[in-house]
Amino acid sequence: MGAVLNPSNSVDMSLLGGGAIVSFTPLKPVGVVQGTWVNTTNSACKLCNNMINSTHSDGDECYFNIMLSQGTYTLQVNHLTNVDEGILKIYLDAVLIKTIDLYSGSGNYNALTEETGIIITSGKLYKLTLKINGKNASSNNHYCQLQAITFLKTA
Image (cartoon, rainbow, N blue to C red; front, side, top):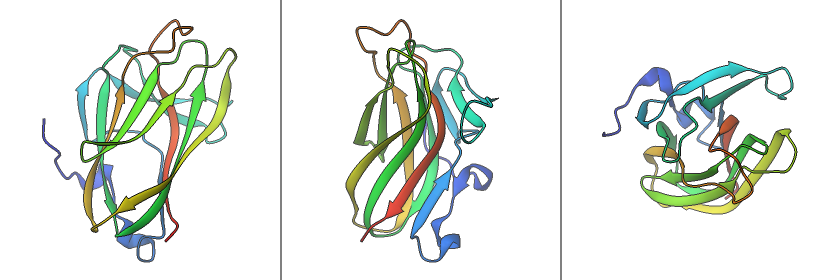
């Protein structure tokens, strides 16, 4: 399934003063490769809304379109951790940029994971893919619950 620009599901960084920061709540993916991804409301979450793979299966995958300008970025992912979460892999145009083990022994509705030093060599529309790939040996499922994804331009 190819990336299709859908303006209602895409983030255009040119609207944000030349691409200094882009942050969005992943409510509805541009495309789904596997599984069912839905928006839920949870008052325990700092941002109140989150996207969850309600099928909670290994291999669940969806994607978004995101416009990034040339530069160096820090990726920030606001997410839930718990006993039933999977391992999330995040890709930009099929290049793995971050793996997050979403498992924890107790629930944290407002976890933040970062990856620094992401170098974007040319400004363009990128396919941002989220894929569940396995789970921690202590986890009892493959859930993924995300509140926000942010690319902060640092250089």
